[in-house]
Structure formats: C-alpha cells, structure tokens
Image (cartoon, rainbow, N blue to C red):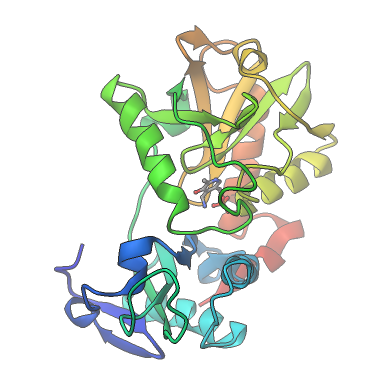
Length: 304
Ligand code: PMP
C-alpha cells in the first residue's frame, strides 16, 4: 500500500503517496488510540460523488470527541480534504480513509502533551466481500470472540483499537473457509459482523440489532431509511443467533461491504440459500442512491 503513485492529504496539505510517513514512536501505533472513517465515492449521474460525506465526517468528530482527541481541523476543512484526495488521485470511484492519530512527542498512556494528526488517503476498492458474494450471498460463521462490551471500548467511536477484536474474529472464521465473522455481544446476542452491521428479514419485516455494542453504521441508517420508504416495518431489537438461522433473508451492510447478502450462518442455510427478494430490492435502492439515480436522496451525494 505504501509504494504507490498519487497523493495523500496529511495535516493540511497534499503530499506524494510515498512521503506520507510517520515516526515509529507515534503514540497510536503503540497503544491503539486513534479514530478513523471508511467512506466511499462513486461514479454518479453528474460526476464522482462522495456518499454521505457529512455523516461520515460528523461520526469522525464524534469518535475523536469520545476519546478526548483534540481535532486540529474543522469539519469543513476535512470534508474538503476528502474531496481533494479523490480529485488529486483522479479517482472515479474509490474508498476514502481519513485517520486521526497521536504524534510521537511522548510515550506512555498518561501522555497528554501530544499532537493530533490527520491523514486522508483514497484508493480504488471493489466489492469488499467479493462480486459473487454480492449476487449470491456469503458464508458466515459466529466467532468465538465476543464483541466489545459498551463499557470496555466505546462502541459509538470508530476507533483503531476496536479492530483487533474484528481481526481476531475474521482470522478465526477465514481459517475455517468462511467469508466473514459474526460477533455476539457479552450477553450472547447478535452484535455485528467484523466490519458490518447485520439485518434479517422475517415474514416481510426487517430486523437489526439495536445500537448497543455495534457501530452506528451509516449504511445501516441508509437501509433503515430506504426500507421505511418502501413501506417495510423495521424493528431494532436484540436478536439471537438462532433467529438468524431461521430468518427468511439476512444481509450485512457497511461502507466497504455495501449491501452483501448472507446465505449461510454456522452451516445453517438461510431462507432459499441465495439473495432474497427484499435484500435484492434494498440492495438495488442503495446502489441507485450512490449512483445518483434515487430522486429522494440526491442530498446523500457530495460531488467532488
Ligand atoms: N460495524 C463495524 C465494526 C464496521 O467496521 C463498519 C464499517 N465502518 C460498520 C459496522 C458499518 O458502518 P458503515 O455503514 O458506516 O460503514
């Protein structure tokens, strides 16, 4: 990843990709306190547009606020930085990664006199869980690793440290040949995927875990909005893994994963074992939105 042409926005200016480096004693590298976003830009009706840029930027600021990380830039500057990296790298559609991290002035968890840095990179990234998965559904396994408890890590913050838990879960199930991991909360209820929120469909109603130990996903919010507009009943509640086994349909949502159907959990085939009709409708509506083809949600796009 580090050896590429292009530009990365780093603390206020664009620098050549290979020069966007930082010292090995950077605090975040040692202790994991840092926050980031995952954002996508799509080729839309009137050019390249970033999907829900303001909401992603708001979440980045909330994530930093939760950890008391002092943001050295305002929201407008960071929104423009995200547009700028897409333009500078001449990307039609891409993934955008803003990251906020501490500098290398001090070591130790008590360090306070420490600077905060911000970088924004962008690169092309296709279907995160595979094109075939998008069409036919993926195979998921419940991980033996539990999702963070709400009082262990701050689940409303999209933080660097959260993802060791995600990687442990993903490594475990990928080793057994599954596409993605499902994590349960400390009480044993369904929380989310390693990098996605989860939805199930049962008897025409849409269910998703309530916001306790899962991330408040922006794709989740988009799907909830689209589902309500379609007249679907949506219910946010605690969900058990056997409710997922017996669902008619299930799917993951996320900026990287977009809307990915789940065809199997823990070797139980879900519904017909392929992408279900409600999943298909929501997936289509989502892709219409990001492509600027959904008249009601033109405001979700921010043209670069
Ligand atoms: N949960 C986790 C753990 C994630 O990493 C992500 C991806 N950011 C999501 C849920 C989905 O969030 P969003 O739709 O905002 O990308």
